[in-house]
Length: 130
Picture 1 (cartoon, rainbow, N blue to C red):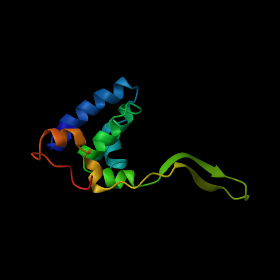
Picture 2 (picture 1 turned 180 degrees about the vertical axis):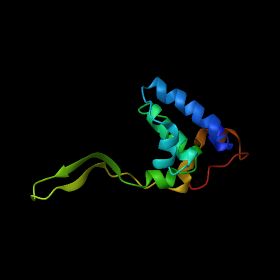
Picture 3 (picture 1 turned 90 degrees about the vertical axis):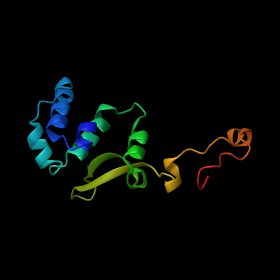
Picture 4 (picture 1 turned 180 degrees about the horizontal axis):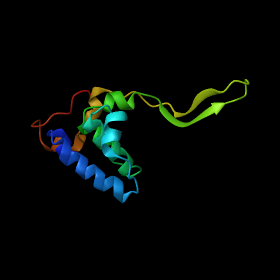
């Protein structure tokens, strides 16, 4: 991730290749970068991290750090994609898992515990909008 963010595309691709090969993915990384990610190494790294860290509870911290929280979390949570043949003509559908509460700018930060604010006798204040 750091290599991609600092412009070292070749270094980032080398690290991605190691990670992908360990997982059994031997696809051509240059072709994937070009065809799937339009040459955007940062998006490729972010997606690879999303896959590598699936179900480990780190995604929310990544999307906050990347400043994409509002774009990602304000979309509906989707589940299984399928084709419905009930009308005779296949229609692509997506099962919505649940409706999310709207995320706001304040959700980039946690609220400070009121006990800590009280202990500091006015030297610290609550985060904005909390």
